[in-house]
Amino acid sequence: MKKTITVILVLISVNAFSQVKKWTLRECVDYALENNISIKQRELDLQLSEINKKDAIGNFLPSLSASSSHSWNIGLRQRPDTFEPVTATTRNLSLGVGSGINIYNGLRDINELHRSNLQILASQYQLDDMKDDIALFVANSFLQILFNKERLKVLQAQQQVSREEFQRTKDLVDAGALPKGDLLEIQATIANQDQQLVNAENTLLISKIQLAQLLLLQDYKTFDIVDVDYEVPLSTIMDESPETIIAKAKETRYDIKLAETNNQIAEDNLKIAKGGLQPTLRGSYSFGSNYFTSQLFDTEDFETQITDNKSHNFSINLNIPIFNGFGARNNVKRNQVNLERSKNQLEQAHLDMETAVYQAYNDTKGALKAYEAAQKTLLAREEAFNYSRERYNVGLLNAFDYSQSQNRYEAAQSDVIRTKYDYIFKLKVLEFYFGIPITDIN
Image 1 (tube, rainbow, N blue to C red):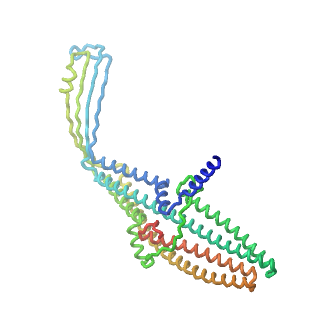
Image 2 (image 1 turned 180 degrees about the vertical axis):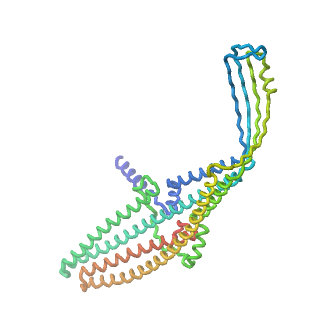
Image 3 (image 1 turned 45 degrees about the horizontal axis):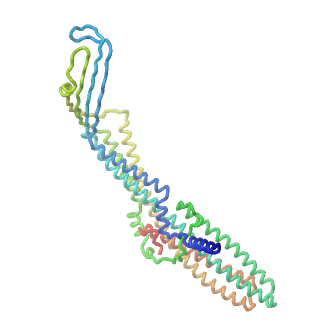
């Protein structure tokens, strides 16, 4: 019975381990966008912008208020009929409701509503721009893990070759066909490879932890990504000219759209400030009634007084600003300066975009050349290593020179992996400027 329970527990453990989730790039990006704190802050900014729009809409609606007051007066009073001083109590109740609406205020309400719509748009652009930045960051971390995994596989494969060579050399040394120094040299190579493997495993673990923490995962120790051998994607982006990519980026990138929207907001702010120099016209209406009672003389009942004492009041208020300590005019000048600043920022955003695209284009071109050169170097190093191994196997090459050839071959393999993923990322960045999602690797 105990044996059966033990087997069941082992099977459950194995099954649970085999079900450890391995994340795709799309899943990593989506999870990061859903849980990132900075993105949540931007989403709150967007909500505030939408609330501000409701305030702007409310400016077009009439105000409505109700009022009521109830007062008592106890003390020495004069009778209205005999003019004798007496102590008496009087009570007064008044009720009213009023409404007012802006008829004209320098078009500030219209401009504030237009500005609030632009602020919502700007908040959305800020949110989308941050999402793009995080997607790039996640993709870079994801590709770094893939690079570390492939590099680890290369080191493991090379060590397996070294161990096989060690056994073959040991047999030859025992038979007296090779000096013991050759065996010691291979032992040193294996020891060095062990150290490289430990470093590679640690580097891979750290890169996994970094991505898991970027995703705000609590159980980052078991985090892993899918074991997919990403090949260099086929892309026609390099067939496009930098000018074409720049034009596309200016149409699609949110940082350009954000700068354009901020410039429009600055224009509205200036219009609103100029509106403060214009007269304002406001209409209002109020309705009220009151009830009065006193011990000095008889008064009518509550319902009669409320009905008889009704009053209506209509008014139009014109306010013409003449002088307010230069406040309004300085506000106009201040917003004129801010408008010039936003124009400069928009121009700088266009320049930054052009620089970024040219840089990405040249980086991608250079990364492709480096990758192609690394592939050629690997082919040459592989042939040289195979030749060295043949010579070593027949005793025409010593163990030291053979080890050096193997090290150069390993370095060439690692360089191909490094340049491969460097090219993939730079290529995706360039495609990203062209409007192609960063998650489309293959």
